[in-house]
Length: 372
Image (tube, rainbow, N blue to C red):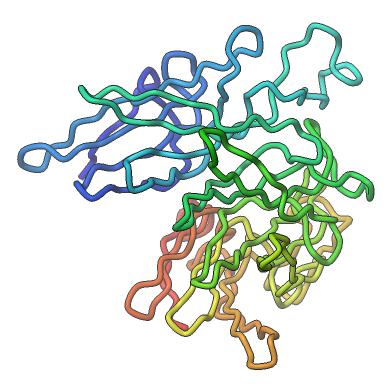
């Protein structure tokens, strides 16, 4: 059953999963489309019978001249107890990020419209059904980070946590792209006195700690953050990882690399685009986009560079504080699929469910189930 078909004017190319409220309403984003072709936030409300009412809550309208609110929301939203929605846009805002790739002159010529470095936004509902948008933070593409690919996670205190794909510490010079430099950061946004304050909790170095986080974080009961780095800057050859960030009573955070994937991806996988999921015993599960095949093309080869179509993995904590990786499945292409690209695994009744972006009988992707 199709609930809604996008026609462009009401959004196009949704890339993120949905979030639901206590009333069964669904909320999501589209990458593009809407009044300004910059993406939208939408709501689907159950109506009589099996029908749904669709409404556009907000049209992003960044143009880099008069409007700087953001464009290309590619991540899922998060909902607080008051019904406010929070999210990120990959580009937009007032940050000084310019396209500097093929077809652009060196360093972006004077007067060229910037792309912006991305934003964090809030949508708040009002009586009568209207919604208002507020920009909580404009990334500047420097030490604060830039290009937030992933969505946010909200703790019980109302603090938001997220990642940026680029920006951060640029001293090692190991990560760069057509828009920004730096290997990405983990950040928090805390609300106090009517204002939001951004803090960088960790800046990735592009070494064994990983680079370019593209997936949302998860929180455990102790307030520790867990996530993945894709390690896939535009050269497809930097390190990827699974990491933990632990808070201290002094307000500082300590990064621990739980797993540094081998650069060639042989045997263990490489480049997790998706996030992690916990089970009731504290084990972590995730997928990688490449790897799993013991025969690798090597990091210097042409894309995909890595042997294998990705893996499903399990990370089990030990009493000594370490973690052990178990390979649950290596994708071959057909019939099981190839390259699980996005979306966190669904853990249901002891089984893991997910999707691959290609492979399968028609090479258009698969839906899979793995029992650990």
